[in-house]
Image (cartoon, rainbow, N blue to C red; front, side):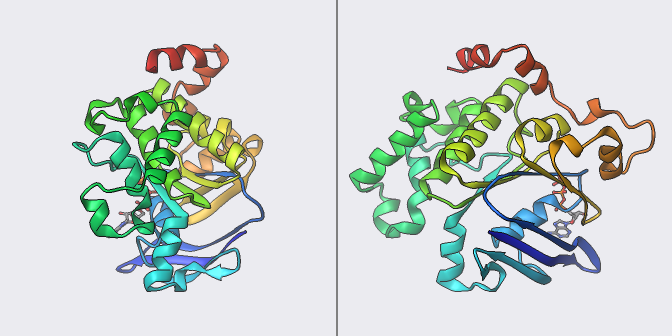
Length: 273
Ligand SMILES: Nc1ncnc2c1ncn2[C@@H]1O[C@H](COP(=O)(O)OP(=O)(O)OP(=O)(O)O)[C@@H](O)[C@H]1O
């Protein structure tokens, strides 16, 4: 499905991503972990063509997406939705309009600018918001929502593109543990129910272990670990983060795990409703 071959990105003489290779045979939930500056965001941005690669190939279903230009590149970008740490919504615009912007690549620009959306698109946006549990927020300005709700709006906007791949760059780094859990549950559900490939850069080990089928560890632009969550032991994590024997997992953890084991999911949702 996805074949990344010897992909590099240089900034000046420094390799932010250094000849990385891996394959994803079939759709899954892949987490990418590593300390700040390891190259995680640069890799996602190359996948989405927001940043050019310096070398290598990224083949998705047989096509080298790094070689796409013009309309073909834009078509790829709409199949490959991106979710960002800071949500990237239009704060003063209402929620449903923000979601409808996920359809921009499919619609004429001018009517969209003036807010003329086909009824089908509006109904689809409302159905997605309903699926993500935030339909009642549809008419509010995005800026009036909590961080977790805003990230769910961003996920709804991504789903409006009907993407094959969802790339999430630190999707919960700005959220408190309860909101983080709701957002991660949402991403996982989208993978399970829709079979979309999710690749998420994550800054906490417990989140990677809990939600991912596969974890890729990056260090200094290279892949230094590629395995299952079970194989992600403290020793392995120490290598990925480049820490010494004093490495502590708590420094790279949130309390999501604790919330889950206490069975507080329903409580978290109640609070967020
Ligand atoms: N536009 C740029 N110009 C110059 N250097 C860059 C640029 N973008 C990234 N870098 C450098 O590339 C390296 C990898 O950065 P990247 O943002 O991919 O890391 P990361 O693992 O995502 O870290 P973080 O979690 O802090 O975002 C860093 O050393 C960074 O300073």
